[in-house]
Image 1 (cartoon, rainbow, N blue to C red):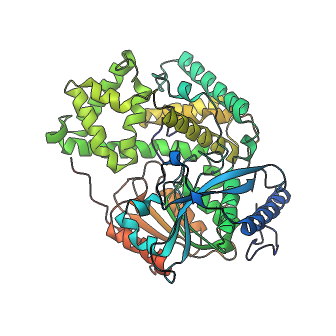
Image 2: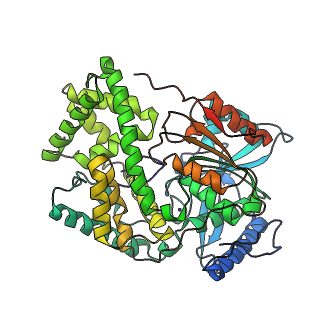
Length: 530
């Protein structure tokens, strides 16, 4: 399940080298922890150092951004070349799209570049510098000290994009109901998943073995070098926290400041099959939080005064759409895609409840407009298909997935009994990994190595996409880290919300390196008002 934004197949969530010593560039490489495949990792580590040295020499040729990228001046864009395969640093290269906006303060106030990853896998970070051009109040202080730098990770957007299916076919609706009625439904979904995996091989086969989180971490280090930065300042959200955890493990001495927000549990056994099962449980919990809120605001939405009544309305809507898709295009799959944004983000609570309320009051079109794909939005559909392709490719390549259908069937049938909102939708989204046509790696053992500075971890207790246990797990693995817990909240991506208890500490860490002497609990941010 993708963690950065709601899905479109009913999509994902339609919706992760150790190093040899070298002196190629200052602090370029750190000694590794040994592992079973350390020889391959050593080769990749040397390749990463080679690529970083080359990038440091080349720099980035900053220009005005292409008009169709939607990035206004003074944001600038450029390219960084990285090896497709770090074991062959002089082999095929791919170009990564990067952008930046300079710090808004004085030359004396500047502390370097702050690089951002929003999650996914498959999310683009190119909009990050727009936090400055749109005058986002939360980032005003940080922007004085840092250049804001975004990038499209390998395979994403403008960075050698991959694809698994024709984008217009990808968004076609209605899709089959994710919850199977019988074995025939399961066989049909298994066939779709197998065909999707085959489509990835046909359309993007050469990229697939190299679409791993460790490779994206190496790319991040090459970008750091290309920027002329000795050390990395990094903000990662959702999947971006796993990218940060892997980077911190492979390049501990290259980090200056790192914030990870809404954290993927980096335990090897969690990546990625178990992570998705754990999401199903957390999504059900947050779905109920939203329903309680809808019931408490019955005066605005008229969907029932109890959570059970709101759930009854949902089941009724779902059954109606299963029998006859709304507007001919919105079935249960499209409904889940739309409604899951409520457990994802508090900012979706009001819009989702409003569309639901209008439907119950007799206005079906409002819900169709909100939940149906737009075949005319070809650029958006290309982006959605690409995001799903990257999500699938990275999760399938990062780890070895169960190949036994019996295991998938048993685990998801069991979970669906108590956590029906997302379970089967999430299972089908990830099932291509069971028949993945490219090599699958062993996840990195995330942990503390020499040179790792204190990392700031931010997490809400009721997050659906990245359950709270992930933050606790990374906190234990990264010695000296500090954990800020937003108690009783669950909106995904805490650093983007107004909560002074969190915001002031994020600013203090980025501006001065200051952390509290112990972990901190913050009250939740304000609940949405209808």
